[in-house]
Length: 408
Image (cartoon, rainbow, N blue to C red; front, side, top):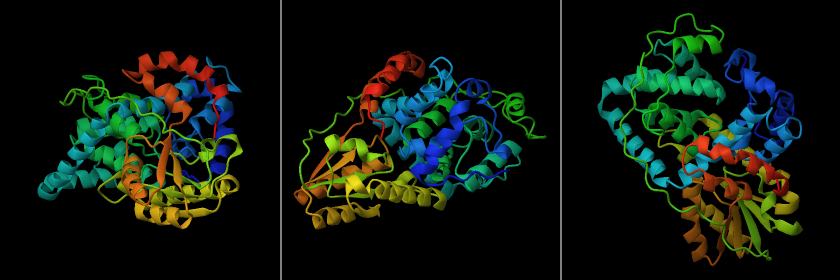
């Protein structure tokens, strides 16, 4: 296998985007389902680690692609970009699904401590030693690279749930601990979809013939995979809650900017050429899981945040700490004599939890925390009320509005 390497810089993300642009139209539509790690996945963009952290923004990707291809030609890739946006909006309106997943994961951890058979099966699956060649190869690829092709993620989740009959929450957690692009909404809801919990009764079955076709026969013996996929039982979706809005904001002296792992392109926050006193970063990457998150993920995120602070220093001011401790951010804000801290809104997940913990600490220090929602999200999230097929009806209009949005 030719090992992928993702450099944790915006420059690397832009280079990956430039290399992919010629293939974002008909090539992607025709070949995107092929999982070919031995060729470093030539038919997909491999942009997800950069887009997930907004080292390169969705607007930049879409504007670049549609500057070269028509919407019709690049429809499949454009939809793939919007899938992440849709998942975020859907979960933001139903945060109880995330907290329910985390509670169920805690119960699964209790079972691992008391059920030796479950723990052995879980360990074998995570380490790639189940004897099921496809799953074992994908588990090892994920651990080694921090990446899996989207089709492989679906196959992996299906085998985990329906062949190994392991709790889906443990599989979702395995992905969150190892994926460089691990995202609370996309990851959680995709696993739920495979298991028949997201679109009630609709499951995804990993079929040997499909795996053989789209891996070009890479696995000679796949083992005894499940022949059916009966949807798991689960509660009904919670009622939708109102989407958040941006805090009131008037540019003023004494402003500092705070980055999180959810948005590393903060230039849009400062309008009209305003500058900040300084900038720092607070991230919740370790809180992706109650278990140990991979060093690869932790190192990538921290290095990417440092890169973001460095490349934006001319507008954001001197780089402050990159930390997982809200108290360190408060100390930095005090030392800089800040009157307010400005940050991009973090959707449901660990970064949002960190921001919630930070807000009262800043208030106690007499410092306002101002969160702003990107116009890209504010325009798209309200349409994530039902399934993606209803959401995608709005994509042509959303794309048409991109010219008026600041990309980074």
